[in-house]
Length: 114
Length: 112
Figure 1 (cartoon, rainbow over the protein chains, first blue to last red):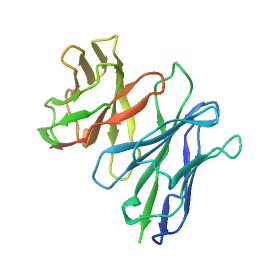
Figure 2 (tube, rainbow over the protein chains, first blue to last red):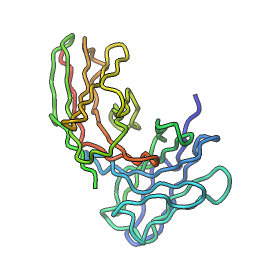
Figure 3 (tube, rainbow over the protein chains, first blue to last red):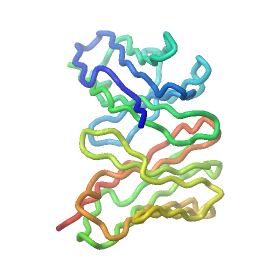
Figure 4 (cartoon, chains in turn purple, yellow):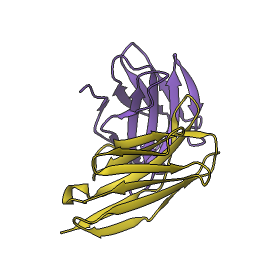
């Protein structure tokens, strides 16, 4: 079965530094998402992306966050100036199209901000 | 906005018994309700889902029921096995974007 892949699996950074989390969605999928999960807590929606633009974003997704689809395969999440509270597991997800609700999740990037 | 409440936070059942996890949602426009299983350190895996035009759906030992009037939906696992031990999340979404709002999770422990 095709999978969403994420790199790196772990990222350690210093507070204030910029990080880019990378995702390769399943190739024929059209809708892309970023979610995050702070250790022991619920999964939280960050942003959805369709047709090369953000379609929805949550309150968490403030000006320090941005997403990009730089080419036909990658989907990235950039955090401009990381804070301690950004430490979490970040999951990328994708789904096929208008009638396909099932989200396919990547294995996640564990971000640790020191 | 949508809010999803999930109970209990921890559920311990004897192997072979049934487990029930309940969720409520706030926005009556929600139209899709998936359940995810997450093992420690791994990605959430969809185990079953239901759309708002259906009241019940079953897949082997797993079933989901939806009460739109009461805005409740529940996950039922029968004949529980040790490998069912995990954290289970319910979620709800509205509209065509299928942005998911998640419950807080239930840690299911299957006692041998």
